[in-house]
Length: 154
Image (cartoon, rainbow, N blue to C red; front, side):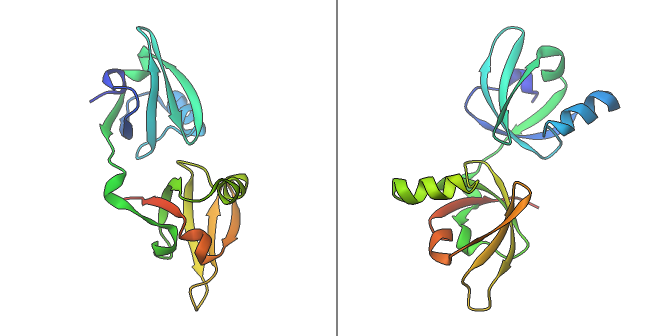
């Protein structure tokens, strides 16, 4: 299946991009690469808008017809951030908390579809250290239990 045939509001995983090296390099700097996740937001006859890594990107049909995709089911790998194994990558699905705590966590960069890496867990399991958006963040286990993540398939 190609991105030009995709339906809106469905999560997809990129299988292959069939473009020349220069165009491929440019798309990779924007976050569009093999294995990456995206969601189609809107589509017209000549172009489409996708969300990739939390950013909106507009692509015309000449590019859409060269990106091979497949539907991606997040729910099959859902778990709490506190249950993730050290050394694993995951994407944030949601924060299950009251608005004040949720806002504080989101202000620290923990937003939907953000890719995180669980770096360390203290010997007694509290706190946890994660990497996201180019920095390290330490969370209490009680906070990590509020965050639902989707473990990245290897």
